[in-house]
Length: 112
Length: 114
Image (cartoon, rainbow over the protein chains, first blue to last red):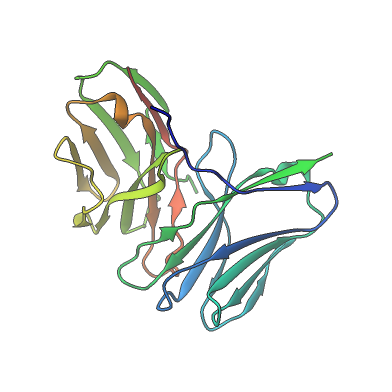
């Protein structure tokens, strides 16, 4: 029969533009959120995190925004570079043990 | 610091054979996780340990899968007997409970069962 795989949403951006990757989480009790980047053939790599008592956190070229009202998380990448091409996952922790629940991922493609 | 170290990086085996995947967590981390990643199901948590003790193995798919952590610096995930549907990338990850729950991943073991 036909196999059905995960269809990753894809965001295609021009090099130098800003990228925004969105994530909806399900558990209103989640109090810690992380963004991971996964390049082809590699494991997920930590990018940035945010706690539920914050609504914005900035890193180097990346910003995470948290909207608890609508349970939405976003990752903004400034001046996107070819090396940013990867799959990006959001993950949430509801403080029930040290476990993360991962979203399905978004593929970011950067056009030169 | 060295990251999470996994071996083998790639393994191709015939169905029915035993497969053992190995992991060395980051030194000082007291949580260790085994994840499986497939195109069909994404990233799935199989089992995790705290201070070498299995805490939650509800993600282990069936009795063919087992995991051990004999000491703080070593864990194994074993599949016996292996089946083609076990083909996936298996990630080990670790975290320190005091560090805000950030989990660091290894590079994965790419398993193909033919």
